[in-house]
Image (spheres, rainbow, N blue to C red):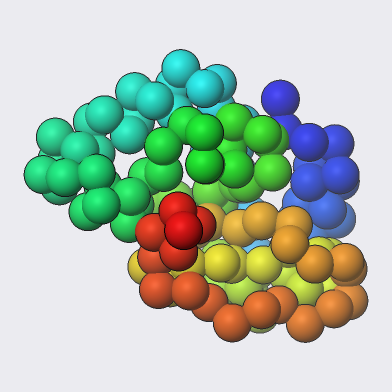
Amino acid sequence: DAHPLLIARFEAAKSAALLEGVHLYITSGFRSFDRQGELFAAAIKKYGSEIEASKWVLPKDISHHPWGIAIDVNYPGDRTAVKWLEENGSTFGLCRVYQNEWWHFEPVIAPGWKCPALVPDATYSVD
């Protein structure tokens, strides 16, 4: 399951967003190691190599989804609502982390801190 702290942070952000008429929802959060492995294998087939696949889906031992500390929000649909979370997520300790994934958020800071700069894609987690 998703980490309770992540869920609490997201629920607080979701409630604040709703007060402004913005609807946020998790489309993908916790994934088993097996499921993450399946997604990575499918991405290798789609993109042609592990490196290219890793820009979008990380291997199961690197991805934060199997650890319950990553969520995908409103994907693939409502990018406008997710912009609210990107702009206000730091209040709740949630940050977008990858430039190429507008939907992916992680609890990488304490609430109220400033989110770190985006990295281009998930391959920066592989090093």
